[in-house]
Image 1: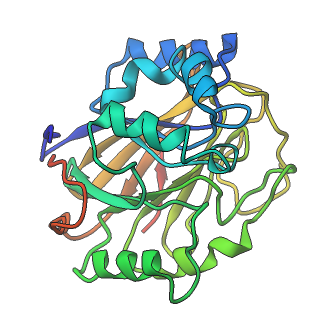
Image 2: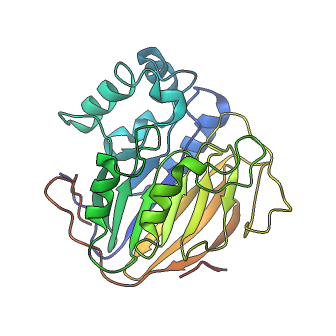
Length: 276
């Protein structure tokens, strides 16, 4: 497997954009203009994640980054994942199995992909796997999946079924990334975890409840993506619009070194947000 720098890594994160349209292509150009070690694609290839959708909508937008993408499926991908999502990512990442729940390292952090569309309830095999990854102490972990536990969006709102996953991460992770809501939402720390919703990837925008006091910032008028620069003990972040304007930025601290990824996981080496 390719190795990401152990001392620092640059990562883009975005979801809800692969529809083959002009706005999605603009976000892809933004990412291509500032190359990164990894793209976290947070789910949804429109409309149904079929093989044709991946060919005509994902490949023409974010497909250029496929070999250095860490994906997680969205609700639009899930019904056809056996014929669309799974074979696409098996081929792109040269894996025997499709990317599901897995872990890797970058920039002194452990990154955890946690599929929100599969069974993740109390007692599920996937939740047991997650808990096994969280045994080493420290919070230099970043977890990502599609549907956010918390959201100020008017379309979907809080996803209560993600509570078991969120609760497992308490005291063990500093950052959570999600899509699903088509906007940009950095939250104030909740349970000492900073959550970012970065779903303004190109497929229409959803409005926000600006009065939601949990938000540190919110934008529902620009397409764009979240850029993270991971370093030991902190992550610098910036929400960047397609025209290159930084909408919000800051840093999130963590403590402890990145835990060693177990043999079962995919390996790639490699308290609250402060705003600038």
